[in-house]
Image 1 (tube, rainbow, N blue to C red):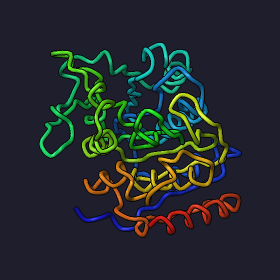
Image 2: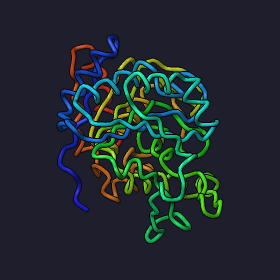
Image 3: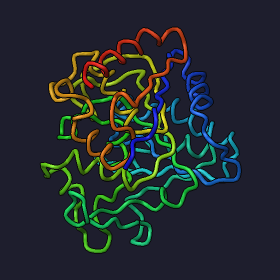
Length: 306
């Protein structure tokens, strides 16, 4: 598939989080949501505070932007891999925030067989394919918000591409087959993460990098504070920018080595047409004076690793 032309990643100082998210939403140029159904995938993999999980202020702002854009309905779909999903959403405040925004919480673990879309294994590294929640297929638009962190259990990074693993079933509700056991034991784990994104829609991804984990992850690690938020309609471009940002810190050897677009998840996602194929196709756009120097440093890293 041909690479998209010059995908843009917008970056803004996050000292005023609500202003930052409002500006990003405007600059990305998200289409009208008037009368549409919207699915949201946040990051609630564990019962740990930000940056392990979505910051409550970020979730509140994102849900508010969607509501104010005229969405007919909002559904927050989630599956926690390191905790009981319903309890995680309650303890992290996400359930209450969703209720205040008029959004429905969908605990993916509870979905019946008809709540899943089967992706066949042909051409993939998944032995029998996988199941994606129809919450995301049936929506008119999908918005996700992810965090900036490394992943010590084989993913290397946990950014927008990895975040959508939470849209896939842990087990097949018909026969109990454990898709997550297959994923985490496979030498192709990072390619399999990319393959999920080929079949799971996402119209806009927001990366909250006000803080992050430069090593460890996903639920704990070495804390860093870039104090920026990034957004794009292109998950590959966004993750490449996130990796460049991590490389400005003392991040893990797996994230530091090799060209960014040669990293397995990025390379496979680009190959499948999820997003841009190279750093040359990626534009970093600073939306304020505070983030311009950071963007120049990230651009340098992207060019050096091209």
